[in-house]
Picture (cartoon, rainbow, N blue to C red):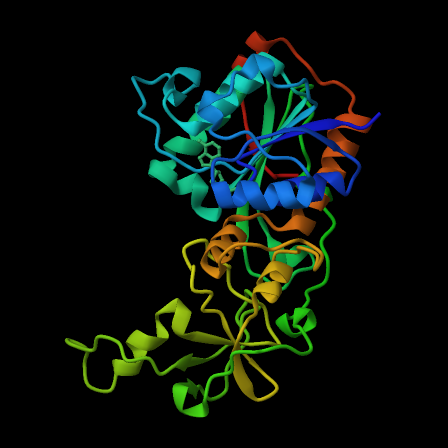
Length: 347
Ligand SMILES: C[S@@+](CC[C@H](N)C(=O)[O-])C[C@H]1O[C@@H](n2cnc3c(N)ncnc32)[C@H](O)[C@@H]1O
């Protein structure tokens, strides 16, 4: 029998694709954005429920795994409790009430790289303490998409919790050898090339430790008041949408705010914009994934998504470590409280 999962803050189903690839079955989804819901429905044949705050947790089907890439909001911490009570009024509270009611074996949460620093570190502290209060042993790490077969430098915080008290070993996730932007490019298409007068290439670009090769910038007219003599170009360079990256390296993070899709690459001695299809490939989506709606909506959707092959690898290890072969390490909750430690992948 397939393990069942629920897909919260589902977006366009990046998490779902990764877990379905390992044979998991989705029994419930929720997403508030109408465009994301429509895309989800067209691709998975299921219209997600809307606002999670309005969903009665007792009506959600039983499941083994709760998945959520939730928006991060500050908690108003009353006193020193740093747990369940502090999460009221946030979207994490909705995850908590579902965990409380349905008690799935596993919870997997995804968030931005700097999640651990959000609100001075209070957010992650409250979240780990709350999961612990609910009986979950938690482990977390920051993973990079470029280690999972896509040429994008995209770091994300992943928290995995197990009700059986089994620690999740992030070191067991199989990493792949790096691929370059040029490996995922479309061979032909109606590409938006820049004229040579529209950009400047820098001499001797170097590959950065992240795999990025920053090789030039667009000559955009931008505000230059107040800039020092001979430094005007720097203000152009520092604007991410003006930067040009060599297709022999890795691409920077596809961002949800970049609704104009200003991602420029240098390939075959020319500079062009990435196509939408290439942006979806950078997130590990297959070409048969249906795209619909305006371009700006599609750029927002893909920038908000998760990288499918990374989720697939997490699904594989969740299945192996926490479900199929899990020997219960469960100890009574009070002893847990006493021993409470949440590990950042320290094997
Ligand atoms: C970071 S994105 C997650 C994207 C998803 N993991 C994917 O693969 O596409 C967060 C999502 O939560 C949704 N969201 C925000 N508030 C919500 C709410 N109250 N109920 C349901 N979904 C919500 C947003 O519309 C957004 O799509």
